Image (tube, rainbow, N blue to C red; front, side, top):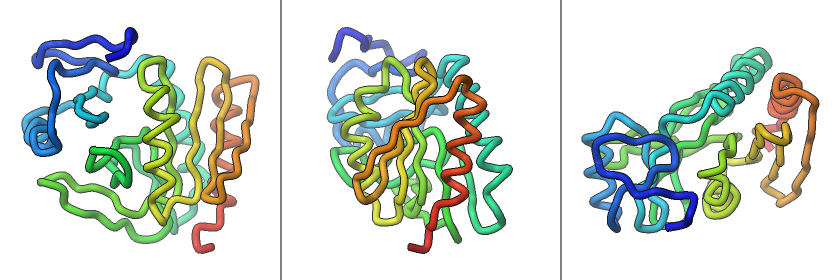
Length: 195
């Protein structure tokens, strides 16, 4: 456990809290069935993904609003979908936003509907989740055949790092979060999901 993480008892969680102990996938899935919060399995640790800070929620809201304005009838945008994991021990992750081109395809993972075909995955970074978002979660997201773009948004620097399937990386900076959200939404709207 890193210095930024804190182990907590199983009664109250906020984002980045780590449940005390080490867990298997089966134990994690059992835990998910009884908890209202969103959690992810990072290696053998259960990490809470709920209870984000105000800046994080505002960034997700701005991105969602701007993408919704431009999405067209053939794209679906969702804040709460779990998506299939392709690397590591976790069966799924909870990115901040996903965009699906065409019909949504789900897989039942122990009673949880897990999206199999996101086209775009957006993660808003936080001090607690940055390392996971920039490493094994990025690799997992890009491992899904349907994913064309993964966007990592830094609210402090007001930047978006855009990773494409071809492993091209583009860094965009804007003066405000709203302007950054507008730019990311334009990129998503112009994305060729069929190609």
